[in-house]
Structures are given as structure tokens and as C-alpha cells.
Length: 336
Image 1 (cartoon, rainbow, N blue to C red):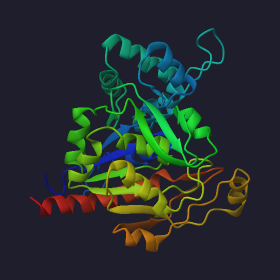
Image 2 (cartoon, rainbow, N blue to C red; image 1 turned 90 degrees about the vertical axis):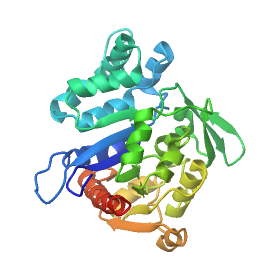
Image 3 (cartoon, rainbow, N blue to C red; image 1 turned 45 degrees about the vertical axis):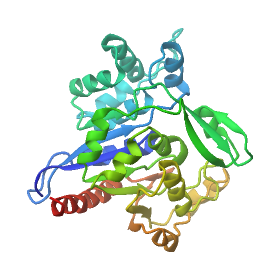
């Protein structure tokens, strides 16, 4: 390892937030500037989705839900335009087919052929020339259980996402599941490990409930960074500040984990804020003083993508990750 060898990024999460970050990072996987090393990307993806096409396949075939993995494959594919059209194609008619995406069916069929979901993902990545590695956070079939602020319990990611009561705690069912050995190796060798962007309790935290992942992150010499959410999520994170998000991560991970909180400083358009306010969602308060008091550094950038939704800009988020990876590489070289 030297400063000019590829920077190693491990991106942990799920949902649209992770695939957006991967789309941005893909542009850095080939070195175009001699002074800037390329990036090697490993995505670790939550597998607790139980809704839509993924949920149907999970229930009918007892396979890991393929939806988030599929989106990550599209984001890192060499020909994203074509693969996106193909893998995101959703059947509109047909008994048993209606509502399914082609990509989900492809991954499910390959799992049946190979007998193993992680191997099916690996084979797909090779065939489709994916610019990185994609691992499910566990190969075990798991569900989410949430304990809400009123003490009640809700099982299933879809039901949890629809809950209007604040979440106190998230657990996996079954409680003890293991990660892939390749995931732990990637974490150990990383220059930077990112959590998010994405839903705190249904995309980020579930990965930290897999036995061995928090310890591996803690023991890694990499820089560890969390992309703070841009907006509240109704029910899940109502009135959460940035430090509330971080406390939830540390609580579920069994202790302190992060070096950096990555926050947005670009103003969100008033029209967008009004639209979100109608759904009881407001911008997350980035209480920077509170973050510093937790012993965590802040990386601030213009991260909002100006569109019809409040989302992280893939290019801006990726640029932050590359900068943190360079810091992580310097840290690792000092320790050699």
C-alpha cells in the first residue's frame, strides 16, 4: 500500500441513499488525474426489505430481498443507462409477474441456480461489469423489530416505516447473525468507511446489528463518517437533530464509532420545505456544537441536490468521501 494505490471505500447502508452515493463514487473508480488515485468501492447493503417485489420474492422463495442490491448494481454498472432500463423494468401485467422488476427476478433465479445469494451477486457483478464489490450485510434471512416510544413493538421494515410513533430501538430477528468474511476483510482494509445517506433505522442501523460489524469498524484504521440525514422522516426520526442521529448509531453499535459527521450547508429551497412540512418533515438541525461535544469532527459541504425532492447530490457526496479516504490513507500509512 502507498499513497498512489487505489483508495479503499466501504459504503454501508441501503435504499436510494446508498445507490446515489455509489453512482457518484463510480466516477472515481478510474483514475483520470495522475495526481489522484482511483477508488475501490465495496458496498455493504442491508437486507431487511419486506415490501413490494422484494418482499414477495422473500416470502415465496425464502431468499434475501434483492431490491437494494439491485439498485446498487445499477449504480455501479459500466453501462448504467441500459442496465437501469433493464433491471428496473417492472412488469405491468401477467399473473405472478405483475409488480416484479426484472432485476429482482434475475437475482432470484441466479440464487436458485448457484444455491447462494452472495455468490449470485458476485457472479452478476462479473457479468455486468460492476465497478466495485457488493455484499449483503448478512446471508441470513432477517427481519426488523422496532420498539416504539410508547413501548409497543412493530415487526417488519414496511410496517416500521409506516409507523407514526417515534422509534426507541431496532433489533434483528433472529438476533444473532453473522456477516460475510469478505465484508470484515473489506472493513479492515478500508481507508474510509461511510454510513448513509439513508433512512436511519431501516437503512443504516440494521447493518450495525449484524454481529461483528461494529467491532470490525471500530478496529479498522479507516476514517469513519456518517452522512447526517437532510430531513426528518415522519414517524422514524421526527424532531431528530444531527446528534440524535449519531446517538442512535452509537447506541445500536454498542459504543462510539464515528470520526466525522458529514452535514449539508446548502439552503433547501423554500418551496421544497413547504411541501415536506405538509408531511410533517423538516430539515434536520445540524447542532454542530453538540457534535463537537461528542468528540466528533464535522465535514460540511453543499450536499443538497436541487430537484423535486430533498436528496444528497451524488457527485458532491462522493467528493467528500474521496477527501476523507485520502485522510484515511495518510492515517494508515503513518501507522505502518
